[in-house]
Length: 146
Image (cartoon, rainbow, N blue to C red; front, side):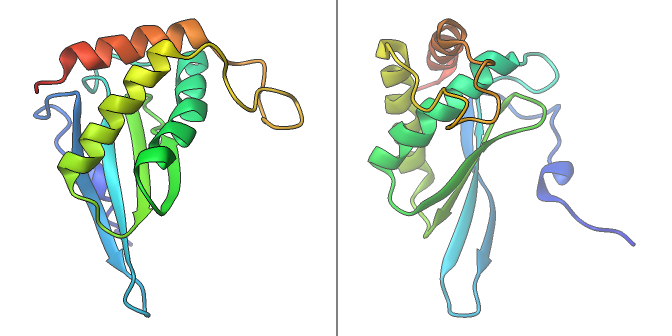
């Protein structure tokens, strides 16, 4: 049995990070559109965000992106730790998502506190790095072509 996975079809040797791209779209039986975006922070197979920084970015982006984009279902780190998948009900324009990501990363750099970092709120509350999240946010911002 062969199952096609969009991210496995992507030629990771040809992309140039950072970027935002549409990575999949489905229409529900009732006609709603669910759009997935690839928020690539680092160049695949060249860079990787350490787990503590990635985890902190996840917590911060979960809030900051929701301030800018309506109907977010989820923002999830990629297993390769080079970016995130953003899943939204609806189809915001890629440029809108990119702007929201850039603005959110700018907020990360100015953040002094990470939300939901207690044992009650987080499944791995000890594995956070605000310092690392800020460092990688700045690296990504430096890499975006505007």
